[in-house]
Image: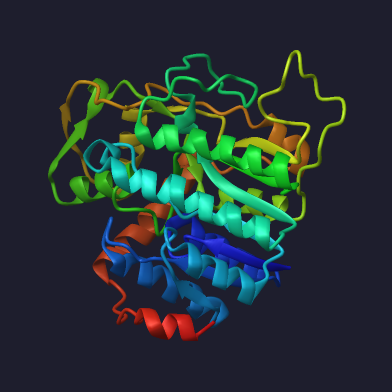
Length: 352
């Protein structure tokens, strides 16, 4: 199939592009290579993919550039769009809220408009477990309400689900939303805990644990995320004619729209997570316990049974195994960083 992956230089995006190319799909990537974190890591991810599967078209475009996105859709005519690009991070949304409105709302609208005017067979987009917010009933089910987000980031992801539903209803666009649960693994984002914690431990810096280390998280290894996406590509949702309007299921619809959780279904206490990192790194952490931070969710746990029924697959890589793979990459990458000159934006446009 002809597939467009946005956020192709990102953590999940790069892994996704690699898998889809290996599966024989015709893949085009899109990324703006912004400086939310060091863009060199994004270029290194792209180089890693190309080293394994060769060149692939990659457009240097910002989500807010509606005309450039529309031009890309006209040129590539994708059958499937996997929309992973977004302004990420819960804590950064407290400092720079407009970035989330511009990228996660305005940018997603541009993707939806292009899917409307250049019809696609399936739009898969990234949501987040953060949408569950103040909900304390676990495991989190896609049948649960998500009316109390605790951060602007979570609110934009909740809005994305509603925006996708409206376009699915109005224009018949098959849309699948994926609520990711704490994704980790090689090539991860440096603002997330695996790299932050691993750096603190290896450099003998103080490791700050908020909520006094009492959090629990449902960690999901990157390969399980990518396997789920790969299986969903050719499984667009269908309308449910007998959908109950009086007792509506929040995860399905009269429109061709649905939601899935993708999580390991085995929440791990934060202190256990740190202990596993210590084991694989062979070092002991210097820990400082701090109060709960604004926007943080206490505990997460996914009910991924709907995903299993739809695809025959559910995440299966245990945290101990996954962290071992992550640490192997972490020690190698930060000891021997790849050096690649960033490609100019214009040359990337011409590569299409």
